[in-house]
Length: 237
Image (cartoon, rainbow, N blue to C red; front, side, top):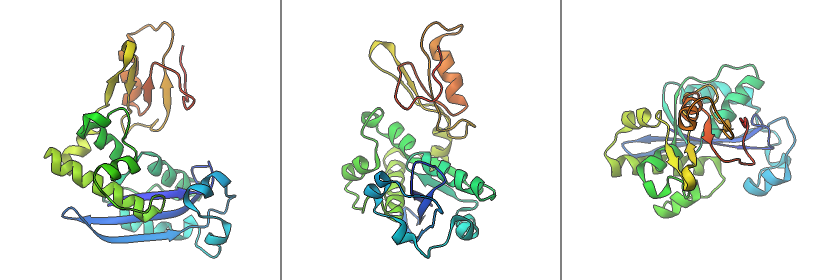
């Protein structure tokens, strides 16, 4: 199963479209997509990306209405998403509407790609870039189309590496360590960690080795860096 969502604005809970694609034996066999009324405002930037606005979602169900079907479809499945943010969107929207987070096994396909193909470990692992690399045709920023592309990238990684789905589920739990110029550390977080999606940057003097600090942060879900970034959430000095 692969999933993708689009949002109306920077609020992670403002889902305006959800797409799911079911895979069997390495091929997409069923797709489900729905527009969602986020009951929220639409940011011009988001609209320019996916083309969904207030007029398009008028009369569409809200997230609470579609939640039972979503939970039934993904419950108990391995659900591939291209970046952990889609998982965060579902979690935030569920919390906003007082619903439990659907139970499933999430699998982050960029983590898979970065481990499967070393040349994209640091860049080039975006959905469009990988789709172009593997000649996967899709309509970018349509939720079902993006979900299908993410699923096909996972299928390709399984075929090329010989590591099966269960193997990849275990592999991505190990942080992907990257050491850049000047010994800079770039470490991705454990996708099962409670702080998944946060970015922490270590600068200055530390009481432990910088790599050890980065590893501890990565184990609880943070992306650990030793250089600052505009997206850093928890800079440490």
